[in-house]
Amino acid sequence: MTHNTTNNRKYCSQCASILIKKCPNGDTCERSVCEDCGHIEYDNPKVLVACFATFENKLLWMRRKYEPMAGYWFIPAGFMELGETPEEATSRELFEETCAVIPPENLDFFMIGSLPDISQIYLAYRGEIADIKAIQTTDEALETCLFTEDEAPLDKLAFPTVIETFHLFYKEHRESNYGAHKASVVNNKHILSPLASKAKPKQAHPK
Ligand SMILES: [Zn+2]
View 1: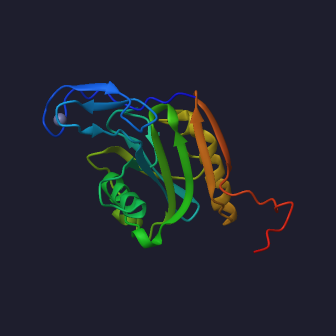
View 2: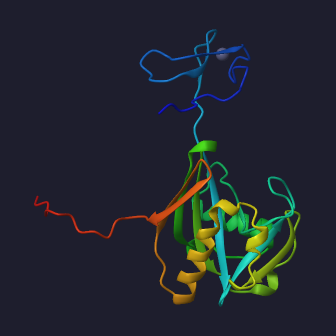
View 3: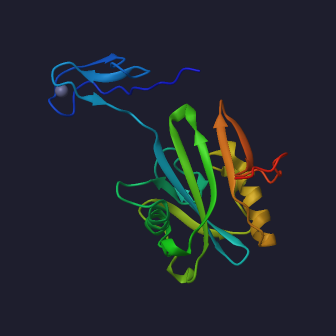
């Protein structure tokens, strides 16, 4: 399998010379390399976070104000900033998009997702909102609303490929029986599975 290991950056971030694409000595794939100063621009995946913020039997949704998929519904989500933990990023995105507050230490892991087609991964966390009076529309959300599964705007979902994730979340939330999951979206095909296999190894592994 081949991976796209370079982006479209033209100029060296260190000396502003033109970058060329080549495989550096000792490396295994093509990079953007500056032949003037020797700098190599490594391009690595970005990390998204998403927040399943609940209140009783409802999940907090927002209608996106900005592209991609402006006008469609999703849960608060966005890119991690430098220096943040995933929980801090999730708490921040939740607040920026809905004004709801869940402190980072009150967030529990829910899912890791792979988006290799766009070189991103996402981490989803869940938590209960203490004070729903804080929720409001924001600069990033046209509407914010708590919905039960029956009320959820799944026909106007911003990223409908991952719809099964929402059914899974509502089911686990209803039953107060949460798992940890992994997901992937490859060629628009969404695959969900438990994060760790519950199968016992065929053989014990003594020390
Ligand atoms: Zn350079």
